[in-house]
Image 1 (tube, rainbow, N blue to C red):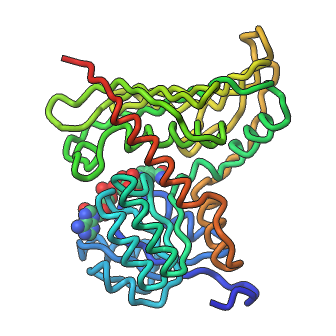
Image 2: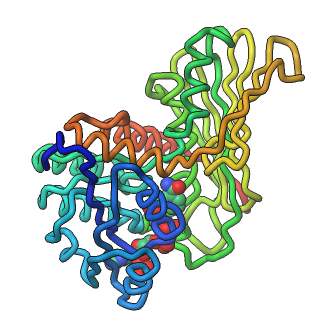
Length: 331
Ligand SMILES: NC(=O)c1ccc[n+]([C@@H]2O[C@H](COP(=O)([O-])OP(=O)(O)OC[C@H]3O[C@@H](n4cnc5c(N)ncnc54)[C@H](OP(=O)(O)O)[C@@H]3O)[C@@H](O)[C@H]2O)c1
């Protein structure tokens, strides 16, 4: 790479013809100021062809490994979770920078192996939590830092959507399925980010799906010393993804915290008032584009991303603590 070259764009390879790649991340890279989609690979030839045609991608492969030998700078890995570890390591060994989907891996051991591979390959590795790149999160963090709600006491979040397809990988334990892994990971992530700490103790209540060995809903509680976080997540309700930060002097709320917000806004409540004191509206922004632009900038500038893979490892450790202390409800 010649980072200083003006107008230099990162050449991305897409490792897998996933829905998330099709619906969000390929369009996001194409809309970015500093990246192009140069290659795509997948196991189904017809789907790879249709991706290449729809998005005008020059290089296409029916074998994931061949993509890693092509002329690309970075890979985006939207494979099912059990494949994240191996393909991250394979990409690192080929000197490709890696944006890997959440959750980073199946467990913390795999996260450590991926971090070690990225270090020895001299490449960047970041987990694809795009919500962190939406300006509403920067605004929330700035409001908290300004002391607007006093001392933060509690972070409360929810992430739900209805998943009816029992064949989806999210209903398969061996593929890292389950609500806690799939969407609870956002709630854990945002609590750790806001509280700048790791949970000292955790407890969860989960309901397992009747026919699949995964949790279809989980309620989690985490203690961070004198601060707390709790969340609920599940596959059995309508789409809902909210965040509240409760401080000694007020409350901040993002009604659409984790999905691509359709009407991004932050409600600010003063002490002892259930009516928002103010509501900040944000222009609609694409968090996927902001995420890939940030990652491409980091590659071009030779600097680490805003969110480290060690942060992802700590997220996984918190998820593991919750799993270890999970009680099981339901019949
Ligand atoms: N950040 C976000 O907003 C967000 C949103 C949704 C999902 N995700 C994450 O993105 C990932 C994919 O989710 P998704 O909903 O897009 O799922 P998906 O559509 O099922 O995509 C998974 C992809 O993995 C491929 N795959 C599985 N096993 C393979 C193998 N052995 N060899 C080659 N390819 C293989 C599948 O190939 P086929 O197409 O051939 O089956 C499919 O293209 C997950 O990690 C998920 O957690 C992130």
